[in-house]
Length: 64
Length: 121
Image 1 (cartoon, chains in turn orange, blue):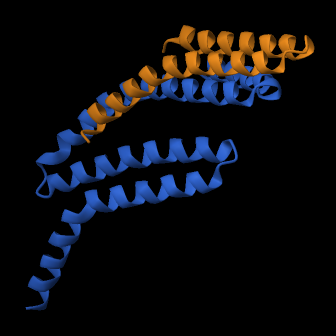
Image 2: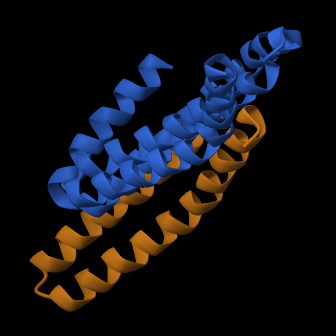
């Protein structure tokens, strides 16, 4: 039950959200968009390995 | 377990207002972590259950266990998709899950039909 993974993803999400807000306030919408995309890619890369682990666990437990 | 999920739910609500995609990513992360933790605990249960497979029709038990695994995965994925408004995708995932379970259950139908034919003769 690796809880720190959840909080890591949440931290990245919150940082990206705040950065996005700051950049839009500062009038740089396009950079805000780029930051959001970059943050999303970072999070998705972290999650893909975890999804892979989930599928492997299901495969091994249920003998699929 | 429950505490962690409640905290994660709060974080998801916080994230959903500003960046919905991050909220979706966090939901998927929580699903994976909890899924792995739960499945590791249920593997001992399944070993106890499959110990009963010395009964005559033991191989059907394997098909049932596979169907359970497939349904768990399909249900998780379709609920996640419908949570974020993609009800069409959720429907397609359910369809895929049903087809997979049907494929797993095919040998059971064969033996069932054989039994019926034997009885009719």
